[in-house]
Image (cartoon, rainbow, N blue to C red; front, side, top):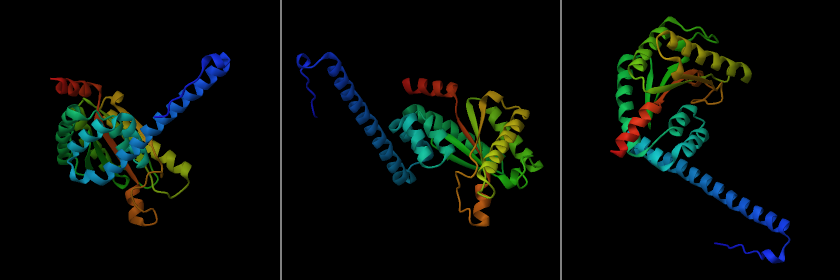
Length: 252
């Protein structure tokens, strides 16, 4: 490692302090660069090796190896707000495995009770996806009757598992202007939140985001692709109470 030596007696105090400040800034930059490199390496490893892991094992590895900051970076690089929310809050290790087992149980319950939903177990969380065609008419924000049934069913599970927080993310295809799509996605997410609250879910557990057409999961040049991109994702993650329980399990 390169060493920096300065002769204090040979330099006026002001110049000495300035040079020392530059050296400190250089070291801080190197540390940030190293941290960013680790994040990229973690993203690469996750992309190439995660297929061989179970969802619970993946959550354990992600949290233990990456932590919240790097996890959030991975989610951002992937263009996936839902995944970023899960990885960003992951504990990892034994605590993460405890949370993962709880999420396994709730995911199975949702699959059995909400037939209109696609349920994905991911790390220390759950992503529940609804095709917007199930929830809304085209370019509308009023929930369809079948949508209310689905959200009622999901809300029942959320109320049975109060130690979680829920992020509702609205998405659109790229038809129309970016501003219109963003507004539509926000209002649809808010509509789902409002109905879940009416169904008895504690409002303090619910947050919303609208992503417009910025996070497509399919080809917007095809009808089928646009249909897939018009969706609402409901992300279920551990709240502080569950995390504290998980940490106690890890210590004991």
